[in-house]
Amino acid sequence: MATHFSQERLRVRPSSREDAVVASAREKFERTLVSVQGSLVGSVAALEHPRSHDALNYGEVFLRDNVPVMIHLLLEGRFDIVRHFLSVCLDLQSSTYQTRGVFPTSFIEENGRLLADYGQRSIGRITSVDASLWWPILCWAYVKRSQDWEFGASQKVQRGVQLLLDLVMHPTFEGTPVLFVPDCSFMIDRPMDVWGAPLEVEVLLFGCLRSCGHLMEIAKRDRSSRLLEQRLELTRQWIHDLRSFLLKHYWVTSKTMQVLRRRPTEQYGDHQQENEFNVQPQVIPDWLQDWLEDRGGYLIGNIRTGRPDFRFYSLGNSLACLFGLLAAPQQRALFRLVLHNRSHLMAQMPMRICHPPMEAAEWMNKTGSDPKNWPWSYHNGGHWPCLLWSFGGAILQHEQRHPQADVLLMGQAKAMLEECYWSQLNQLPRQQWAEYFDGPTGTWVGQQSRTYQTWTIVGFLLLHHLLRVNPADVSVLSLDGPP
Ligand code: GLC
Image (cartoon, rainbow, N blue to C red):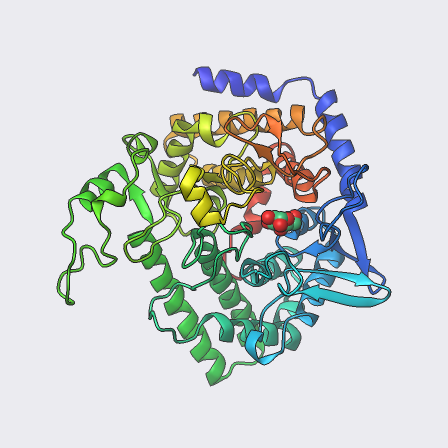
């Protein structure tokens, strides 16, 4: 009851300050939009720091940073910008043999020429995988929301989808449904020991395959072929196998851990399938027991032979809810876990990107002594305001789909979300919409943080929309199929 009361109070709080912050965020957001070939195409990663001339590549249009931008534009009905963005990305999809099908990490128009970065210009020369996986997800969100079925079924889109599927669904040495990637291949784009099958990439792969499947369904209505049928069949199977794999090897609760800790090791042959990755009980970290408490659950960061990554990654877990990878009871176990660990994950600035950070020798060895990723900073336990909308979206989507389920828990989750929103609303304008904040409490602006970071601004606007304007709009990312 107490929860409901405080929720009501929050809802009727005088809103003039809220309105002012939203208006100023909107004004800043408009300034992040840039054009390609004469039309608006999306946002640069950050508005230049007033006192800094060292903008690096933050002045480019990053695909991943534009995810919340495109969703925001879809909700505003500004479909032409989203369509242009999708189309420019397609024009830039790589056609060289070794990277065929890859979408760029970022692009920009300079002196009338379109320049794209596929990793060859970035610090450390890293290739993003997430950008390519996000493209079909955004494309499907656009097609569904705008009802532009024609674009979805067009040769241009369908060709892009097939090129991408060639890239992600191919035989491998592993023979598992996961995509193997190097370190730094997604939002965490500096060494953080996230090579192999990191959660975020695998969840995005799930979303990507589902979206590609829907786009192929649209094309099938116009012109079916045996090839298309086969591709659809293979995609469906892959989605199914991937989901089973992730739920089996990544999902942990206190109950599953008690079984895992007592499994036999060094199993050979195909009859005993209890410990396929030969995980020794000694690698299970101490903090996990309290972290999971009785009824919490989450997807761990990675599974690799002998060396699973038990760290908690906020984005992968939130997207697993939104994309329907986690079943409803698992989603609730995740919300319970976040509530239980709220002082870590939310603290002063929601929400922490990855928990716990690597410290001392581990930080030296695994990050290569990266000064930006020192313990409690940036990707290594820092707090990123741009992550809150996806977690909030997961709560709101769950509430809509299962209004009767565990009302007490969901009330607490909603109250937490409201408070997180208010703490962003109160702090972000003063902190110049910073990119990230340093832990453990997330109080201080990140040591090397950019200011006026686009996904901080637009992430806040998105959450505002979902909480205040129309919660039902969370369906924009639900990945439901064509009507
Ligand atoms: C940093 C972040 C990356 C982001 C980019 C642009 O490199 O690690 O996730 O896409 O900045 O904002």
